[in-house]
Image (cartoon, rainbow, N blue to C red; front, side, top):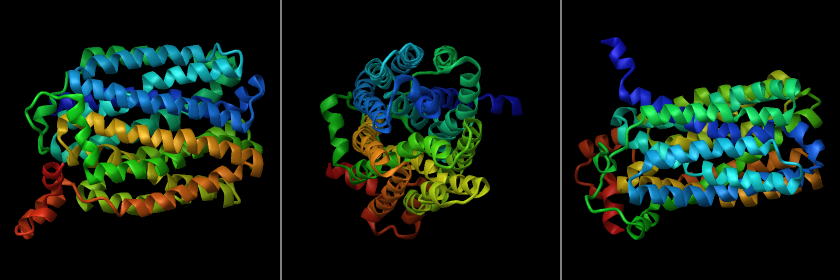
Amino acid sequence: MENKKIWSYENRMVSICMLCFGFTMFNRFAIANLATFIMPDLRMSNTDLGLVMSAFSLSWGVAGYLGSALSDVTASKKRILLICVVAFSICSFLTGAAVNLTMFIAVRFALGIFEGPVFPVAQAFVLAQSSPKRRGMNMGLVSTTSMGLISMLLGPIVLVALCQAFGWRMTLFLTLLPGLMVAFLAYRGLKEPEMLKVAGVAAKAEKPSFKDSLVVFKNRNVITAILFSSFIMCWNVTTLTFAPLYLVNVKGFSETGMSYIMAIIGVGAVIWGTLVPSLSDRIGRKPAVVVFSLLTVVSPLGLVLSPSAVIICLCVFVGWCGSGVFPVYQAAILGESIDSKYASTAMAGVQMVGELGGCVAGVAIAGKLADVYGLNAPLIYAACCMVVATLIGFAYYETAPAIMAGRATFRPSRGRDESPLHSDMHNS
């Protein structure tokens, strides 16, 4: 009986979605982890590195929105997920063949096109196929724990070790294999989600259309998430892009030492990625977003100000609690605030603006700051972004099912407070 529970479809679905998104982020940040090897070979400056990451973010954001909107309208989420996983694995392979900066940027741009839809489409599976009491935790496992374990914990150690043994090009060639394996598991193990049957989330029975899906952008939580996303995305990608260079070129760590410190970020992402969404199920989405966003400032400032490796590791671990905020604002709050059949569109729209504002513009600015003021400047800049994100977080209204049920029980006469979801949906 216990075995049957462990191998239930819900657990299998979450595990496969974790692998899909985990390897997406593994490929995304492989360039940052290998930057000290790639940059001299291709004669890249810090500004060039920022442009590479920005080009990827541009295609990731736009393609993520368009692909997810298509999946909402056609109800073909499994097919789109499979196509994206296979295609981004091939593009990651092709990155190793780049012979100059122009080709490198072009291949990474193509990679972003296919990686962009993976997160919102995978989270649609989780939203539709999770039990309500596990929804926040499952979304955290898929979006943050998977990224922490595969991309941040294993990524730096495995990539640097392979690069030292075989070179950066062969290392990127090898990234094709896990992607194809994940695509096979998704093909065999996932069922198409029924978005009209999401437990505990409002949905209308009309046939989805792209025009109708745009109504989600009138919702206050969606608008807040769009603003919030630009700043937290800038913190995340700026820190992950420039921390490896800072640790090696300024702090004086070896590439191997740097990889282990970056892996501590992965440990933090794994733990916080599960803990913060789970806490948000109990204490509320809004308090979780505000408190842990503010605490995130510790991570970039700790890298700059800490005098020893031990304190640096402690700061990046504690400060990476911000990774646990991602599934709360990107998935749980959005999924609980709008018509569920348009969940992928809302998530991808927020992702797109976050990528364009926080990663395309933000990381390009960070690269220029690094060349002009030194590699500590992007990290200070990232800390400032999280201060702004914390302030924006106060604009959310609460959506956690347990909290809303409690409000309905104790304050039944206050209709608007007890269910802002329905109020906003009717208004929009």
